Image (cartoon, rainbow, N blue to C red; front, side, top):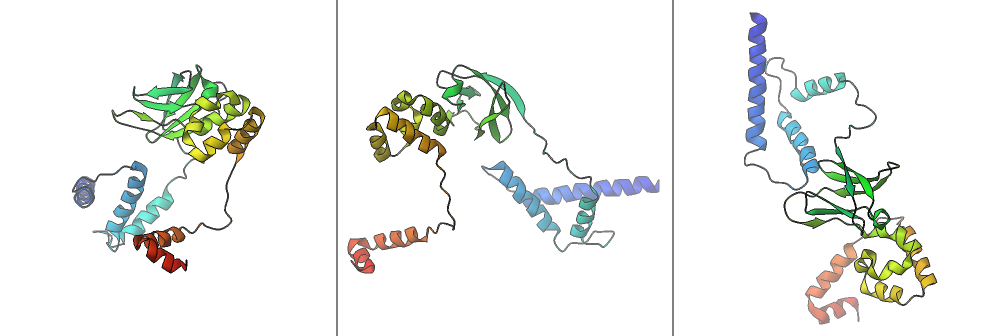
Length: 235
């Protein structure tokens, strides 16, 4: 009888805690775009609600008890559980495929009219080579009924380096600045091939963090008009 009473008390306390968190964290109903970030913030908000509070019966701080329980848990596996659904998709002649009828993703022209393996997660879509299992690209998963296009122009670069004749109709060309497109359009075939290799392999790395404050200063000067900017710059 005593154990039953204690069990009922604990059940009631858990329900009270759930109600407390619902009232404090879900009223009004929160809105968010990034579920993963919201979950991280929600965990911290839950811990903040226990800050300074003691267990109703033990008198020990709740966060201290939570820490003890967490340390007693079994360790997690070295690799996180992959909660995805695997599907096979046949790509179009442009190397793209759709999910949900309206959301387009790209495996790249190298996979035109080929099948690819697609791992569908709650937040990401990973495209893999169906024969090797190699990940080709990963995109943020799109939801809803409005059409979206997550095609990645950089996936075309590998194929363009081998077949530069496709440059004029490529999505890579459409995504570059006009000045660069004009320069590449005027290149002979051999030079264009070399230039495309540079685009494929180029990596920009900075030794120091880039300070964007100079742009803030420039915008403040422009707000004062041309004369004020020239005066400030000593022109």
